[in-house]
Length: 239
DNA sequence: AACTCTCTCAACCGCCTTAGG
DNA sequence: ACCTAAGGCGGTTGAGAGAGT
Image (tube, rainbow, N blue to C red; front, side):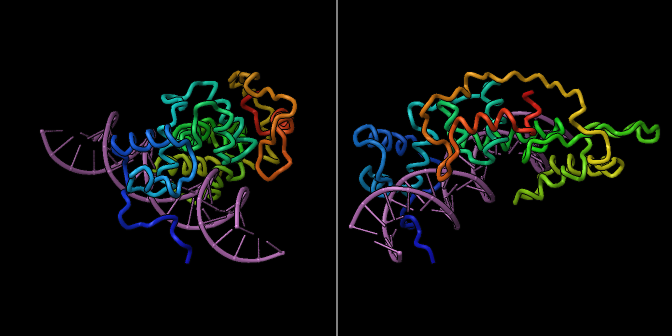
């Protein structure tokens, strides 16, 4: 049995009160970040150290940028997600003032659905849609149809059960997919004129010489990532 | 007005990684 | 080299707000 990270008894859980926030802010202002394990006791908080850390990082830190994501931030998230996957902390690291939790939530509640609606698989950023062959009997087929059942793979790739909206999309997708040919034999989606015209602010990806490695535990440098971004075939959105 | 459904996001959980002895 | 504690991360949950009926 793994030891719990802190004593469960006597610790508060759930939403933080103003007083708790203030105690945490005051303590960190005086002593700085770190030593999360011992912080709650020292600060007079009945909270788990991890909870304090999370509260500070995700909410109380003075440099946090709150409010809606801007268009360029959203585009950057999509682009970085295409390359890094669900490495939220890495992605958030490229968005000043944003936290990994915020980016993750925004991805799950907004971007993911948006991509699905656009016929893009949010897991691999590939287009799901193909143009159905002209067929008078199937004129009503949605153009957002998927190929090779890849839309249903979206959910196969995630542990979370389908929510109702996704369910509907998935249902429509598989319905449509059933009347369409496999991507490999049909016209390639790459032939589509999918100029979605989302301009990407290139400067935000500029990489300085000698920049530290971006991915923990790997040899991938920021420059390599930038190169990969340029060659990534899945990033149709930003071509 | 009351109820139900859906969505958002703060917070928690547990695993993995890292640092220090 | 190994062990342990602490930090960090991504996945998941659930409360609350807002929309719909």
